[in-house]
Image (cartoon, rainbow, N blue to C red; front, top):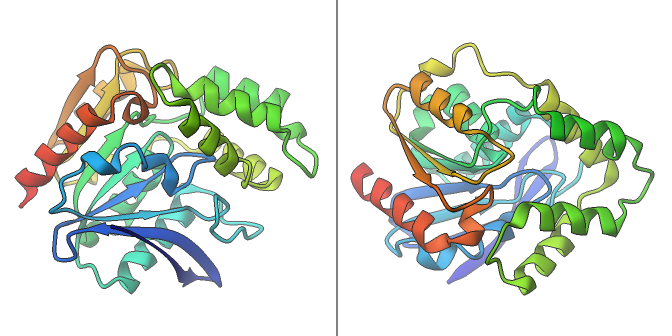
Length: 267
């Protein structure tokens, strides 16, 4: 059963989040990427082990969470999620970051190591400051947004990420979710992603880390994943050669198997 709730975290910002699975199970926090919401994990959730306690927040500025004027970088969002965990009285949790949500997840691991028992990065970039496609998208379109975001842009953005074998109804639902992100959030969050670099202390992450990546991912490269595996000492890299960036949309069963195995090892 999925319970959807709101939680006031800090600075007057309230986050929408879901709470699912075994109430006494090991907590797994799912953090979505830019323009998504907790709904990005809907295809994955049915395949996650029912013994896991799943918390999936919608980050500030996204979906049905509050949309303040500022605070759109990975550190601010990490602080939000950390406070959510405090309010839920979790001592430790495994934190999963998908796509750009991986930057938030690793920031939690670095800023609040006492709260993190494990880290999972799914299709996560090492950094985006050198990504020519995101830079072009920002310079040519996002930075020029007016008060409203064009729905054709959003449709193209979601469809471009989706890859193959993703149900059309799910893509339509995620398009509607993405439309909830205001133009100023698009601008601020994308600009922060383009400015963020690999943390100098990333090697301080000292918990088991699972890195999951699709071999057809054209947004995050293989070299990023290999560098993550080199920088984070207790890490392993699992590659699904036939899948793309949103591999947990394309083949959620396989990604869930990876996550479930990792979670069972953490017990």
